[in-house]
Image (cartoon, rainbow, N blue to C red; front, side, top):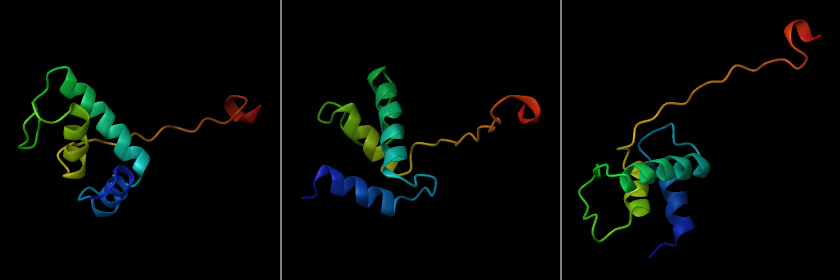
Length: 85
């Protein structure tokens, strides 16, 4: 049986969604989804919420590509304001 870190490594390597490109992004997505589940959202996979914790359900949802997200590009501002002054 794989350990938690092995499972995350395998999830990042084998995920269906190309946007999940790092362990960090996977964990952030699962954490946000876990909060939604704790606040009453329904699981997006066929799993018994009475037998599994929200964090486990959320991680599985992200791995299976059931959690959709977008990456926002932030504008890089030059130090010192306009014109670099």
